[in-house]
Length: 157
Picture 1 (cartoon, rainbow, N blue to C red):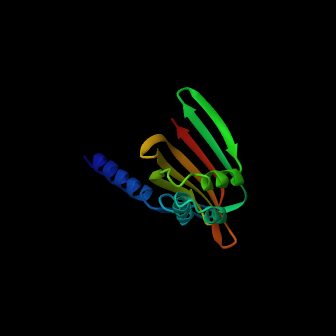
Picture 2: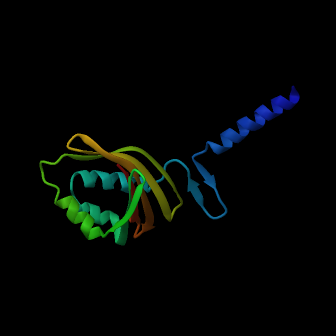
Picture 3: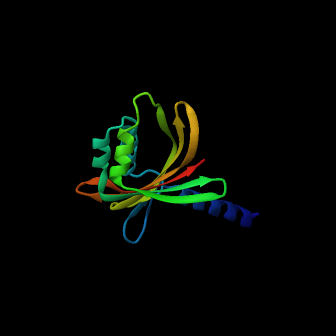
């Protein structure tokens, strides 16, 4: 009976230790649940939906990369888009077109210099779901703010 009690206490202690939001490593703090870099991602989506290309550009580091993996059945296609192409496409969406990238969950991992923010989403066009996926934002602390250096997304049709 004592063996089971010790095992139970050990499991509880392990669960408690692994449920903490922040853990120490030899070099820095690693955030397991929420990270300050998530704010730039939230602001990015707000500006995306407002088609505010000036704000979108301000969130991005010079030379930022945009990559996509489109999945249609068994077909997988990787593509790249320049920041200028992306901003032009956002600006050219007609006023009558209703688009919504509904973020269904955000997780992040990072330290004080770099973070990876994952945003699961459902994309709607004129009220109809067109695809789902995950956006992975690589964000760095530069010039006293978080800047997006890469966005990689999946698009599952």
